[in-house]
Length: 98
Image 1 (cartoon, rainbow, N blue to C red):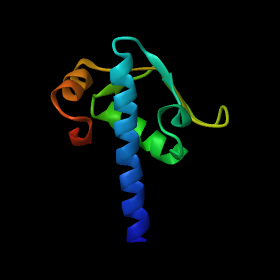
Image 2: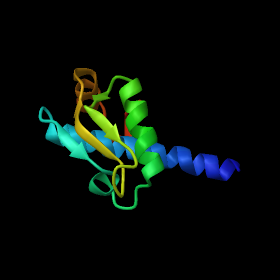
Image 3: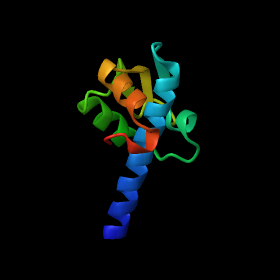
């Protein structure tokens, strides 16, 4: 059980890094993001957890998170907030406070 939890936490952290990295490259333009688009093999669960956590932390914003409307979740019109942009620019991608 602990191994599964640790693996889930690691996948969620990797998903956060992948989403922030993608949006940092697109900034200041919004982007529609899916798990398959930002990282091959990313699970839908890790993607959803990462998207919600990043929004809760004020690092990203998006128009809508679609779950169950297609083969994978979709973040529509996602972008880094000013806080997320500053955080991504000041630290290497592996050391974001995620």
